[in-house]
Amino acid sequence: MRIAVAQITSGADKSENLELVREYSQRAADQGAQLVVFPEATMQGFGTGRLDHNAEPLDGPFVQALESIADSSSITILAGVFSPADQVERDGKAFNRIDNVAVVRGKAQANYKKIHTYDAFGYRESDTVRPGEALCTFELFDVTFGIAICFDIRYPEQFRELARAGAQVILVPASWNDGEDKQRQWELLSAARALDSTSFVVACGQARPEDERPSEAPTGIGYSRVLDPTGQVIASAGATPELLVVDIDPEVVAKVRKTLPVL
Image 1 (tube, rainbow, N blue to C red):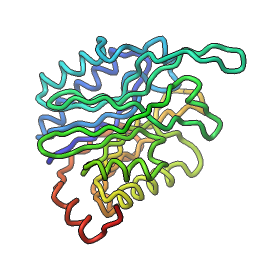
Image 2: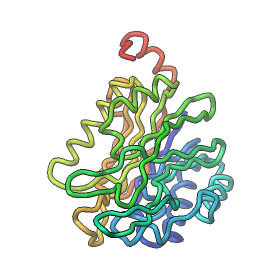
Image 3: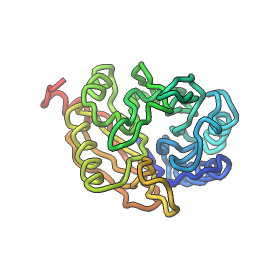
């Protein structure tokens, strides 16, 4: 199976971000990819303004446009979007929270709401994002995929449960926070999750933005990567926007799980 990883930098303008999706989806399709994975926050980059102001229902214009792009490019798309969720009070202030969602559109349909919010390193995503509650898998061309989002990668049991649910490939759209030692942690965690779930891991991050954004916001560092079920890196990107196209053999998963039965 051929999978593309679209490491982009999302900005504040949803229409411009959709054009990036259109461009990279067509480039991926032209190279024979059946699935293209975009990062978390494809709809609007972190640190570019109020997410709740641009959030849309999952049947709204942005996701409808993703469906149209998937159809016109003959490729299945995974992309990170934001949808309205609820209102909570924190320290006497009311917050309109959103759901952080990875949507799949094209020859498969799925919606995964990020379970583990990024409440770490001085940032509190739970103030503005409602945590999800359910794991998500979907089928595409007889391959079972699981989905996790960014900070989820620090929780090995989520990946093991996805593998137990049949996932052979786990897709991880992300917008990893930059900073000291963060690249090493991203690379170490993605390899560990592949190895301890004995699954392929396709980790697609936002590229490092060139514009000024709040230092505490998880704006992305790049370094997207694809790993096999033993944690070996098949392909990797640098810090800047890039398209990776890789071939994976899902039958390898069964062979690895037979010799390394950690599940």
